Image 1 (cartoon, rainbow, N blue to C red):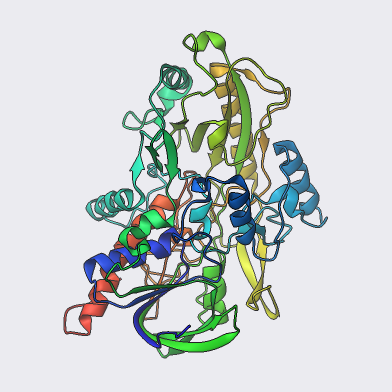
Image 2 (cartoon, rainbow, N blue to C red):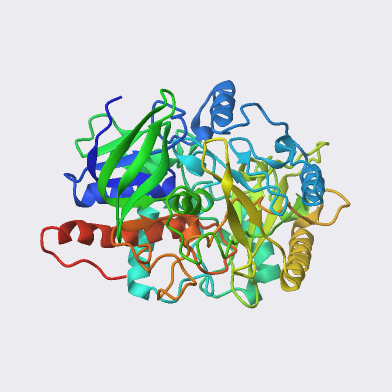
Length: 515
């Protein structure tokens, strides 16, 4: 490998957000040289392909294992109850057990206060493994200091990049019956503009099969050979630290992991989009340590249940499918939850059906909005390192009494949905998955209106105190949310590209966007 020593833009992290920065900058300025790096391997010939699109189950399993960092083996398929029990044991000090707590394609951080906290290390990041759910945030989930017109433009662009649709699953009589029953149970508490509806998904149906959007979709033409732009992707390339000169980041020290070769690149702009845990880790390792870095860690408590659908609810000959994924939107304060009612194929947590019930079974997941607190944070070690040689991370994260009350109410909401749709699959109450199970970690490099010590970056994702350092990903989101955050983070990255493009143009005398 012959590394490019001087580039316009270095992007650390090749998940959906890093890919968004690369795609938007390439579209706006094809001559701009962009280097996108990831510490993990490229799983498929087409970079960033979603593993669900790999037709051979054995190849799919190998791709998942290659994403699992230090745990290079196949996990089991525990029941949700086994996951919950393993989480409780880990929280009490027992060793975390990847086979029970981690999803395929991820590996555990190993922190007792968030025992299911997990990461992926591969080209595409979590974008190779995610559920592709892309609901727009509701009222209090929105970031109030971003003007509505700017937000809507960025969100529309995010929908385009991800290929979001509400027609990923065919519209069926069964799906309509499910949504009608859910509206009867929840409709009065939802916004009239946001009724129960099909979940917006980054997926499409092609030749009768669903194709799930991975980072290759976000990259678009950049995922093709001979794309004719200044874009380059380097896999298995670790960023050890950023190099800093005053209020500018001048580049980074990188390592090609297969050979151990270390080298330095210089860049006019640096973007760190390495996920909500490793983005603050890299900044901290580079001596960039604003007071809010790693703090305000927000995970969405997730309550799970399952229901055997009432045959009277369904049309004759409904079949085994049950209408894809229905969405019960967040609306605070009357319904401060994000509800998903899913065919088992779409459930992120496997739900075993031990006996043929004769009617479809669907999974129910209610995500809760947690109190956002400075005390919930990631601590970085001065002396110990992780498997890649970066500062070891420890998560400090607790549920407040208010959080516990919200979770109990979420269990009641799931029970209400079960009664509306049929009968519970088991005699157990809906239960809370172990902390970290959502994989929706937010807030650790949060944006803010002003540099007051309570945020890491400005409203264009530029790190306070640095002229050319930007951050991206779910960690930028400052609000308490319950909905899947990926599309929000993509929209924020689109908006950040306005600032980057202006900064690059500023070298030629054009104005730079202020934060």
